[in-house]
Amino acid sequence: MNTIFLIMLIWRVANPLQAISAIPEARLSLTPVYLSSQQQDARSKLAAPAAIAVGRSGNVYVFDDGNSRIVKLDPRGKFIAEFGQTNSGPGAVRPGGLNDSIALDHDENVYVSDPGTPRVLIFNSDGKFQRSFRLPFPSTSIAVNRKREIFLTPDISRPTELIYVFSDTGKFLRRFGERLIKSPGNLARGINIAVAATDANDNLFVAFRSWPLVRKYSPDGNLISENQFTIPSELISESQRKNFSLEFSAKYPDSAFIPPLITHSISINARGTGYLLLNAHNVVVFAPSGKITRQFHFRAPRDRENVFIRLVANLSVQTPAYLLDTRSGEIYGASRL
Image 1 (cartoon, rainbow, N blue to C red):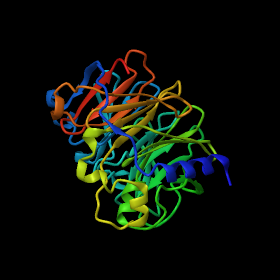
Image 2 (image 1 turned 60 degrees about the horizontal axis):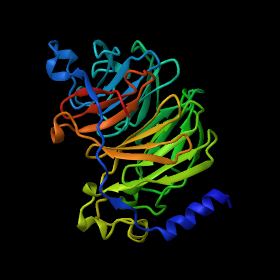
Image 3 (image 1 turned 45 degrees about the vertical axis):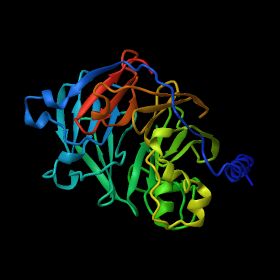
Image 4 (image 1 turned 180 degrees about the vertical axis):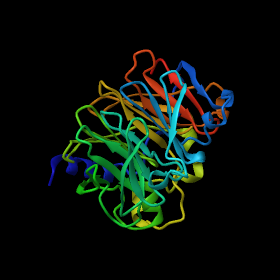
């Protein structure tokens, strides 16, 4: 048995409950990059945007869920193009909900996960549709490495691996990763929902929507590390805490218990530093090893009126990250993280 896996297994048995605590406040300087309400042209307005990716050029690609399309912006937030609209034939994208449905490769090709069909659509950086392929399951997250291998996190209740990998032509390559709960069931499905991102060395980092863990996998799928973070106390009610454990989820995998939404998104910058955007304006920072280095809560420009669901790292020193607000259709640059 893999030594790291054995250590993690012992740790999980010994720690059925997670650390829950108030998180310290930190100032996060946010500058508006794109405000949907200030756009004069109707096609420039975003409606419930659900995912965002930033290319090496600095251009920003947004999964505009409410309009079922991809919007391309320049680094200053100026509208450049739209593609994947409903009338786009085989290149039409469908609503993805809260799924992290967009990723870019090194050449800024755009990969979109369509959970409704389900399938993956691929466009070039100008929005020209290249091809698509069907998937055997809907996916909650998509990531792409330098080889253009596509990593998907399946959203299914039956027991399976955590990550599936396909070529950019749709050929199945491999699958790996242990799910938190192996039993089938709706609660097990909810606990196992994950988001993923690759670093510059093609390592894959995975976080769970409703469990406070960050995993690091090697490019070939071997588990390198697993690190926990503290759950902000505001994210889990007193009534939820009694049943919020892997032990309960494994024993009652089809329970009606609804786990708290903890993690919205994961992103890795060019230096390998990682960021988790948690619910209610909380951020977790982790080192290239996966070790948690910092947690903080930040004040949004309009407090609770802002609903930030994505934080994506950027190559720019001036604007190292962008935050996407799905409620207002706003994008903010974070100058310090």
